[in-house]
Length: 158
Image 1 (tube, rainbow, N blue to C red):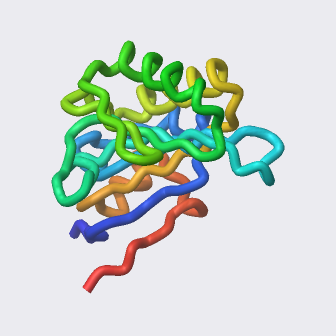
Image 2: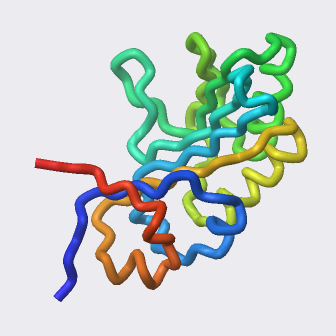
């Protein structure tokens, strides 16, 4: 008998952990790579993320990779956008502190996410922390995928 958790999030994952994961990519609801610069108290970071059903922009979901930034110099934003557009394509749309790459290529495999985190680390001098949220994944599938139980953050649902 399979027992399904409707949604679960694995957070504070390292590049090495994500690179080794073997899960069904169709069960990924969203992923995020938060790249933090030292010193951490300066709160300088880049967050690259992808929501399977689109990232809300105003009231409309936009399909494709997106990123947000905090406390970065304005001149860095075009460099980050160019890097992501080269990898994923899409039409860049800026909305406040977020940049959407509308209709860009989407990735969901652990190795692809880990590779992106490695590139962010080397290109932008950040320490990546990865979050992956799954939908309709059983306990057994989580174990078989190699998802670390100690980094599971169950999402309560009604």
